[in-house]
Image (cartoon, rainbow, N blue to C red; front, top):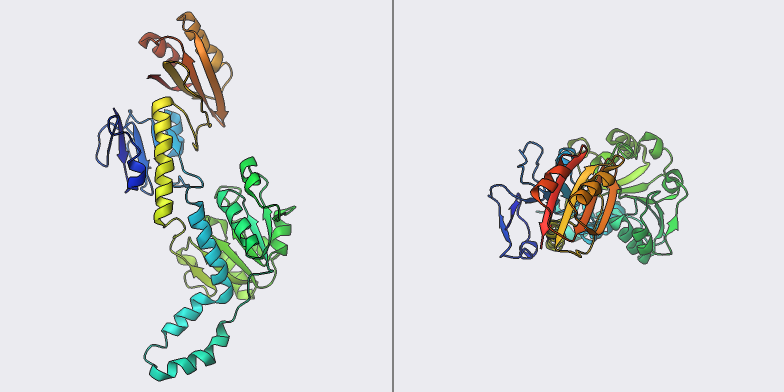
Length: 389
């Protein structure tokens, strides 16, 4: 019986996928094998020794101590793309919000409360203060062509925009999904300089922090509109304020506001609604649960942020899964132990990701506790688990 602890409210559509005869699922549970989490911060939690995996029902894992988990052989999953359509729809809404001054116009219209029969006349007189351009025919630059970026680019192109994308690390899968009409920008600077609208869809790390800074704002067209539904730290707030004051930026719409920009004119703050749809929550829960089931029952890894993707059909009754540091001769030492124990290997798979490697080994006979302990004792081994059908 596997034990799964839920640290946040998880969609029942996902939880119902756990076979009731093989899983115990609860928010209060001792010695869990796995954890399902959304936004709860886990950095100060004591991770139990029984914990094998954490699945984040969402893309970001800033609330999870990933490095500590890696050292303990705990596989951390996320659900990239599960909420992509939800975020994409809000980005498309932001295109119109940034252009047509809808946010400001609605606020002004509400201020007319109490004017009685004068309201229609005042509306007609004041509406010219909130005119804005159509998006059709305008140039959109998409920075980052992952699941969300590709969907934004494709749908914006369908709306009649001329779309360019920049992503030096675009995956083959994303490239297959990208419309052939979307142009490839030769550099980030060329995309920024040529765009009427810029939409950010990259992760936040040391290389992307402040990717839109004073230097980049100086390259932009006057009146550019910027959409940030990725991470707040991607935009340098001080440089943004200066660009707004100069008229370089006509509108900045962000789903990740902070105190520094709430009072800035031309900024439209949205309270992190990108994935706030029942469909997105269900999709994330379903993906997270399926990943946990695949890992707990067969050791397969899909969408882990700290260990490599590693998936193999189980061809024998016993499976050995091993996580280790990515150093030379690990596989040789592991297979040597199996050979000494006269254990024949039916099939095996070895993959690595950064400092860590992961192995799936199907064997034709049972593995003794002594053999398991001998493998655990190899220098560099982080985690060993035996799965019996």
